[in-house]
Image (cartoon, rainbow, N blue to C red; front, side, top):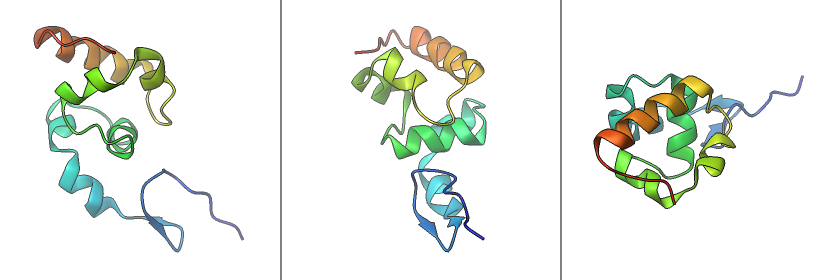
Length: 86
C-alpha cells in the first residue's frame, strides 16, 4: 500500500510531523485558520500576516490546502494591518 503525501512538510514513513507545524503556525492558529491552510502557509515559509506581502493572491490561492474561507480571513487580517499582496 502506497501512502499519499499529505503536505509539502516533513513526512516520515507516511506521517506528517505535526509538531513542526505547531511550532510555526501560532499566528495562523490565533487567526482561526483551519489546519490545512495553516500547513500550506508554513510550507510556503509564511509565518505571520506581514509575510503575505511576499506573494501574490494568485500564488496564495494555488497553495495546496488554501480554501476560499481561509483566503477571505487572510484578506481581512491584511486589510486591518494595511498590508497588500505583492
